[in-house]
Length: 295
Image (tube, rainbow, N blue to C red; front, side, top):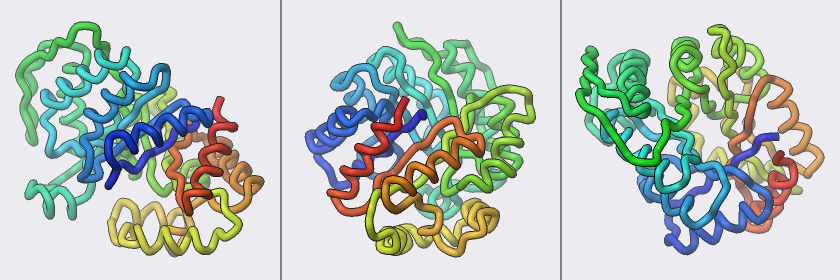
């Protein structure tokens, strides 16, 4: 099974983060992922991680497109590629109106159109091509050249049919959020593969090896319950038939966790991006189990 670990870097020093990353790799984890959390810059931290820890896959899940011009992101991503021996997987996405308009002050009008145009500019830039792109939401003129860097795979956070079709047409796949086996098998996998390609489908879910799954779900609800009010996420919860964020988590004893992870792959996921939750001891047990399943 292809299993990666999302590391929450908020509130950690660089040394604390690197210690957690090394511990995960020592447990067998072969992919480490970071996201936009209003904390460490993910690409900067991944460049450092790649220099400190050899061999592992490094990913972003995900970077917000609106505040990063495609030329600027191509420059950053290719710099990370050169620094890490080309081990980066570049996950991007439009985020949500509450963040893009509320925090950054940008218009969130027609996000799928924005993502298509963003990718049409970004992907050639990552290949080192000279771009003269003019869309209705952005323009990009120029070329990025970083010696030793090759274009990274690009994934997008696609959950709805339109974004999934864009992912299948233009990118190397999708990183989902909150989506379980039901949504993967009924919507995500058939829609993204309709183009005839074989893109990655990475399911991003919270996981805990714990004797008290109810407490784990309650914690998840208290931390991320607001996700129920975000339209793109709400559609996933409705498809899954769950009434709370906590209901999407993979929690319980090892046998239950293993069985639920297998259901994701049986539904067509090509990888799992796990967020270990619970007490420090439970997180350690969770990462150990995930590492043992990694192949």
